Amino acid sequence: MASSVDSIGPSDVVHVDGSPQKKFKSKYHRKVDAVRDELNEFWKLSPEDSTCDPITWWVGHKVTYPHLYRLALDIFCIPGSAVAVERVFSGGRDTISLRRASLSAETIRLLMIAKHRLYLARNRK
Image 1 (tube, rainbow, N blue to C red):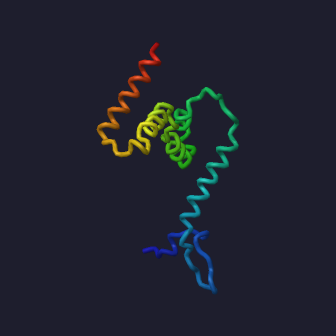
Image 2 (cartoon, helix red, strand yellow):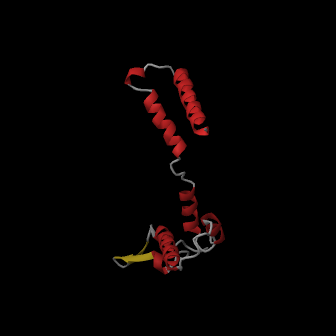
Image 3 (tube, rainbow, N blue to C red):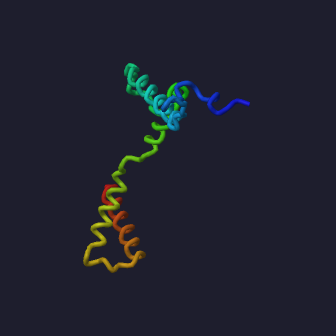
């Protein structure tokens, strides 16, 4: 049976006062180095056609850049601010002012729906 010292590589051992000691963070450092290598390789790529779909590009390169692929998918799932949502929040701020702070949730909902329908009716013309 192999000892735990036999199963680790020479870069995982440091000598303290003449006795070998295992580096506890050696696995972590290898992962960080792998990500850095991926990033360096990615930055060395020449720019490609700007009409390329980024998600399709990352799916095609996920074997080459597995860590960056997961990071890219995490970033792509973050929605940008939508104008319609921002408009609703602004309308809500106008509807629920200090003077109208005691409105019930149902009244606020109905007022917001009415405002949105008025907005749609004005923009259809």
